[in-house]
Image (cartoon, rainbow, N blue to C red; front, side, top):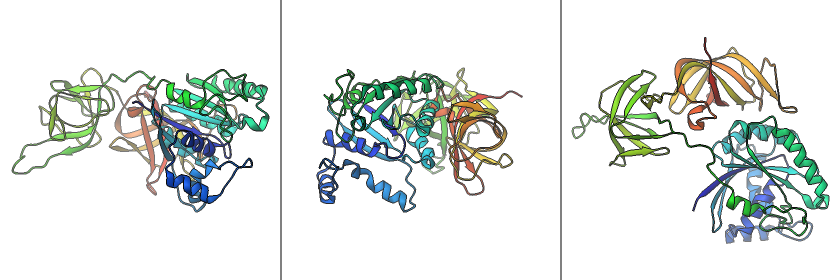
Length: 417
């Protein structure tokens, strides 16, 4: 049974909590004690039905108390597929949290209130989905019951959203009219929307294709740890532990260690003391080499002839995640896998105007701003373009003054000097 990871995003009070609650309820994924708690709470909708939004109320209460909640994960399954939902807050100050939830998603559900249409958060979330290279967008136009299931309302919002996607990277977009409160087009087709001939939400989630992006063929192995026990039993043991983030490695492969550029050959691949002949993308293993070369945490092993970009200067799409604005005179830390290096801002290439999605000149970045920045690293960085290999093209920016993560980076291209 395969797995679909998806994120729900939208504005405040657009019905995300009710939608998630409805999915869990209609798939019998609510535990008996949870259902009893909902019934004891005696929270009812206007029509007397249970208020399913209460399932995520604990998160809202914690946020109100000042407790940071990055992303809430919910799990459910049907006979056809398993699902993980990453639910992010709707308030604009939590836009940064969406990056965390969306980084590994196969699908993004963008909720739009049928009464309000496309709003700023719709544009912001959609643009982030595009930057993060999520292959599928599903636009759920919610609260159709509050506009009398009017097809004209649905059509207008769809047309508005299609104009929005013209400025985004190529992504598959589908549309479903729903009422999370009433259950319309959630688990089954609704008689209230006879003009809609598509799939209900649950069937769509069960059948949408996953892993549509081409598999990364170039082999990448960021070294997370150098293992040297230096015990009497293992006096000469030297292994490099990490996770394969692209392609595959096999015993006998000729590799190059970056940034040094020194070549060697794989003599052994180890997993939990067992020897393997190959290690595929996603595998966490220990690699042994024929030569005793200088490799440290943060270095990268790649196959000879499949080198990534190695550069100290690059441009990156960026989402600023800190309340303290970007300081172009400040030295920050960039972390990619196990590698950490100092970086300086060379240039703010542009900032995105969320109203129009146009690129605008800017001399600063504030909370939730999105755009492109040119960086200069103290050390060479081995990377692939984010659109080509998300695992090896993503990084975070850390403020050296307080060790807080202040930005998410999606590296786009090297800069020649």
